Image (cartoon, rainbow, N blue to C red):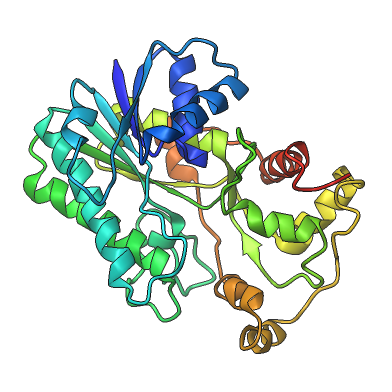
Length: 341
């Protein structure tokens, strides 16, 4: 069986490839430049892979038509993990939204035309729970974020619209192509590379003491290894056809709890971590003058009481704990010298 994984250099993409290779699948992966092929190989070596005859890297960009037909050729499944990357927030939201939607449709059309059986698409929790106002009910896969929700980031808006476009395509133009969608919460876990994903940034600020006061941020988290496992289950299990699945370890963990966990379990590495708190209103005021405060403001006070029951019930998924995911990320920060001991 052959699987295309888009975005092979990404934090999640490489973990999916690693698990698929260990299961014996043949792999194709798209990267935006073949100059990154060695990065893919080196990360797989870090993950314990020693033979690379069964993986092929193809240069392809979500914003361009070139090479997508070649990428999906002879593939039984597609894991669509890649997202368009922007180093700076674009001036107009369409500059981020259009590539996300068009890139998704480009992959789906190529998969349909090549006779691929199923696409598993990576969306995110931002497409599910950001419009959920009832704090007494649990967020499930039935929920959708309103793309016009006040305060919704352009990134999350692009994820909502890309996922909606994917389901609409399957309904109207998909032919025999099947779709399943994974909606992860905050992804932590071990990195296979010194180049860390953006999700490590918040943890780094806690550990190195640059976050002097801990804001009221509650996170639903999940280990990258468990998210990769869930993608593979959604690829192979007949019950996943036409379904979306929330990916979270279970329950919330606050930034203050994370700081205390790190100080307890990794006292030397987290010796600078603060346990002083700051109120929501103080963060809002600081956000008017401080770009770091402005960046975290959308996370402050957000309700994230969500359920992973569907993935457990339908796919037999058994994720690890919040603490395991956090500590694995923290150990990567130390391993790659982002935190000096």
